[in-house]
Length: 485
Image (cartoon, rainbow, N blue to C red; front, side, top):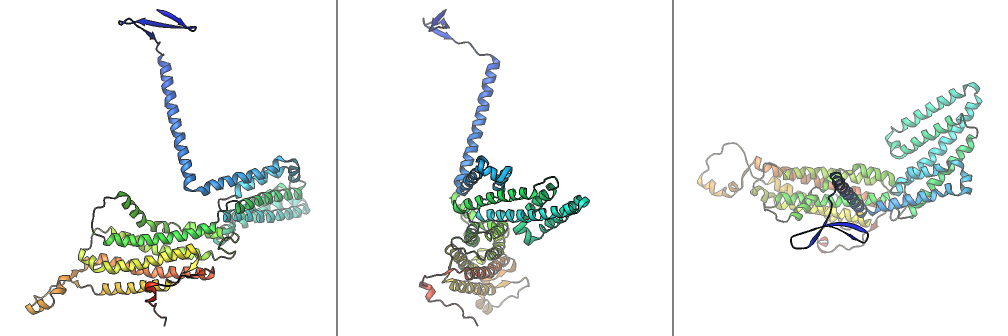
């Protein structure tokens, strides 16, 4: 039967229990397919959007400096766009106001050093190239019919010279961007001047817009949440020293530890991360050199003077990588298929652990020096302890009784009683060799740590680190470093 409620017609059917049920028409096949596809697409899109938002949020949460950089770029572009919106300013720079916006886009970098480097390179290259371009244009106009020939030859010679300079390593490291801007500006001015009457006015407008863009970039990057390349380099060296210390302790402890099954998965992951810390040091060469180059462009800030010896950070990084190479070989020793007997490990274990501890203490003290920019009052004693541990380990290596492959004579009863203890501790060469490799690496690593100490001391002297005011207490008062002869 059909009933009508509130202007709507609906169909109901009678059932066995005397009640009625509403009859709902089924949708067609095409409509059901459409609804299924719609739900599927919306689900996929929403999942992808949610995943992207979570990833974007994680990036900003892990490194807030990236969010700050984005805000600074937006602020710089907003300020420079005023020259395009305001008629008096627009009339002052003409239609070249867009060059100021382009300048902000290409020179604004995440840290102060990179922004300074690009700004200075762009301004100097633009002024130099513009001046040469105007001079070449004047010479070309005075040459009469040879004007095109003079312009073409000048473009070829200056482009050749500027491009060739980009292959010089010392020039490329600091002025590569300037050389590229020089080629671009000189070509635009000299070639464009052939068809433009007011060349000098055009060059002045472009120089002024570039100066406006670079000035805004420098002001914002310095006075609004500055990110200094020098500070980043300083913290990088500090963290790498700590990672070397953790890797050194971890490698030696892992080699001499007893074979026990660990049930703590998180602890194993943290241990593996510390063991692999030396890899960060090996991969940081390019970052250190780039940051050291950018830091030289930065003004004085914090505890870093204008003429801070940034080159020494590259020297310290090189010394740390030499230590990291030793640690890489130490990590290989852990995974030797031929494992040394417990008797051999017990013979060397205490001396190796002592040297490892003394070496890691020096690395952590160097990291503390970098962190606090203070000279260490106990470095001489730590180096003395490390050298003493090296000598003790060398003596342990000399005192290992090794059994050769030569046939032995049958000893008499008296000789057997006298040498019973020595023969119980004798061992073959192939049993000692794996541990001897580790011992030699530890001794070599100690010598390389000494080089890192000298490099950090040189930095502390040239950078005028403050003298450590802490008093030497405890064992430091009882130990005396070796006197230099």
